[in-house]
Amino acid sequence: MEVVMRYAPSTQCVHAGREDFADLGVHAPPVDLSTTYPVHDLDAGTASFDALVGGAAHAGNPIYARLHNPTVARVEQAIARLEQAEACVAFSSGMAGLSALLLAVRQHGGHMLAVRPMYGTADHLLSSGLLGIECEFVTVDQIASRIRPDTALVLVETPANPTLALIDIEAVVAAAGSVPVAVDSTFATPILQQPLALGARYVLHSATKFLGGHGDVIAGVIACAEADAKALRQIRAATGALLHPWAAYLLHRGLPTLALRVERAEANAETLVQRLLQHPAVAAVHYPGLNDPRDAALCKRQMRGRGCLIALELLGGQAGAAAVMRAVQLITPAVSLGSVDTLIQHPAGLTHRVLDAETRERTGITPGMLRLSVGIEAVDDLWADLAQALNAAIATELPLKAAA
Ligand SMILES: *Cc1c(COP(=O)(O)O)cnc(C)c1O
Image (tube, rainbow, N blue to C red; front, side):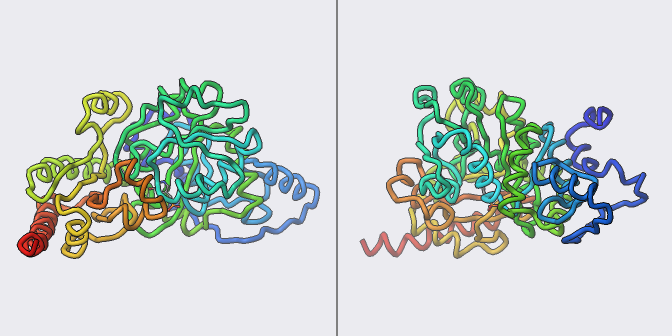
């Protein structure tokens, strides 16, 4: 383990969770699809059962696949390495992971704080109070004064979905005091940002996005200290929100190229931002550190790069955004992000639809906003497609203007 920790992140991506391959005599992770495991020694089996139900990372016998799966444990170990965490717990989706976290901290108090904007469904889960925890939405400046004796968690997402607003993780940790801070770091990936090193207690990823990276697996992970992971595993064993071993295999299959994908997509994004700023159909471009000098300084301090997501606002508003969605040919008009291919979507109409219109407005999710998840294609091909789609948006507006 100590030897492995010395390697650079791009090397970790390739080798983490594969350290025992030479001993096993394999070159790809074995997939264990068993739902149950033979128990010939009942005393040992009972001890394993007790350990796993209690949240142990592994036991002599996995007993039953809802309690433990070696293929899932392997990718958890890999992602823990990438986040430089003691442990990682994988779930059937990012939302399943967030739900488990809320249930785990709920035992310490029924109140939490969160900063908007964040992923639409996460916002919806928190504001609905569905899991019995009352969530107050606050600004970073309000955190310290809104902490109560029963505040069990502070949750932030940075960069935020979909506006790419940045939150100062160290400032949040300082304001939260002894209350644990969870950071949804999905947009940044472990390559660009490591919240645990900045004092966060939990880092969450929708592994559906960059970690999987190929648009073919839904998964969620939480990296944290072993004691916190134990509580999360107890909840996973009890509620059944486990990651299927095939999905775990696919997730692990995506990791070796993570650093490479992020570097390439980010370089593409940097170029596209510059070109978008020049295009007559575009009213505004949002990208970490682009519009606000304070964000730029924070970005330098907190992240290793600005990432692969861009939000743009069309001069033509909702109609302009719809025209771009209709016109793209190479770029896929679809929700989700972090895939090898470039995706574009309309937050107000899709991912952030569940928020009420007033909240969307207040958090900067405008009708003319599109979110672009930049992939690894050749940037000139991406720009050619984007430029023709933006031109199509202008063309759709002209008859409207003429009629008005
Ligand atoms: C997609 C996403 C989620 C939810 O993850 P799922 O895997 O879709 O359940 C949470 N947070 C962010 C930032 C996301 O982009």
